[in-house]
Length: 558
Image: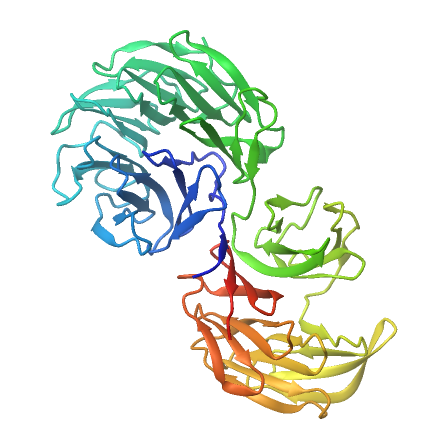
């Protein structure tokens, strides 16, 4: 088990609402990214758990009202119902109620029935018993995909849906039967939610309007905010626990807190002016008001200071490609770079200013307290670590190869696709080819010198790690075998006696220089995703990253 796991943020898409699920006990919230469901503690979001058993992109996850199970749906229409109480998250049931992407899930208050809506060929929704999959009604009345569903948490049960066909539908049951259509919106209806006490039902749409209906009869009661609730489209609403207020998240970059009885906005939270500040999801959990920005940032809203969130949880939304550890101010800082050019600092922070526009491929901290990063946008950037801002202009490069400089600063080793490592002497700003090459088994994927400069380690696509002894004229010290697929990342321990490799087989190995058979194996370090980068904090602490956009810290004992 990792000693620390820093999770990814929600995967966001412009113009698409993000459903955040809440724990009925009020302790956790959950969301999705890629094939993962992430459960985070609401008081301390650093405490997190990740569920990785879906084969396709997960789109929504919701707790059962009992709190014992979670239902999660993916892009293929599959629903998995799994246990929340055990660390293994055992699968209880699996169904495929619709044939397209699942957009929303709702449970009845007794945790026995589930409604699932989204895209599909024959139908856009289904409602069934959780333990048998038997139908308990029919979700009909829509001509386009259904965006949202909710079930009244009081008897008599009512079910309501919201669709891209600009309509909502109202159902009575069980078995649930279509009663009538709600035709008040002029654009897509993005969200529909019953109040916790079941007295009211609200719909929110891309037309910027919120309509209020009677929860038992479905009759329209009024609307919030007069002609328009928001200047932009509304993507999500969430009720207060006492059913008197709700919050709404909008593309106009604001979240509004509404007094439903008075139909007026009590507070408007301004989250910024950039496109990435559009608000696509929200959750009211106990005393916490959360919203999700297009950037993936999770904002904890402050009623007393609406222009400044209490806390903003930052991180990566896309796969992490590289990381490095830099020691400063008596502590270690972990920096990670992702597929979208974003650089994150593990202490929930990131750099200001304009950074890379494409994948960050490699990064390293230098002695001048700068972070040097190279990217697939063909630029090299120097970032001031104390000011946390991109300061220096980019240096344009040609496509970089795998290369490393000896700690002594006199030799550069460059690995190529031909399975050869070429050694160059460094003379000023130029490299002189000394005509010396080292042979690996295949195309070289990573290369690194030990910090004392005694060894050069090379990994290649033939699944071999080779260590060369520098003092002995780069003779082969040892070869290390163990990976079942191509290793792609390599890092030396500060003790210079061990090094770690991570591969496409999701394995991390820690090797001992003097004994190839003595190794520590971390299987499934990032389940269903290969290890993209490694770094050591100290001789007993290893950090790994992966395409699941998480950073994990491991304690290594020899």
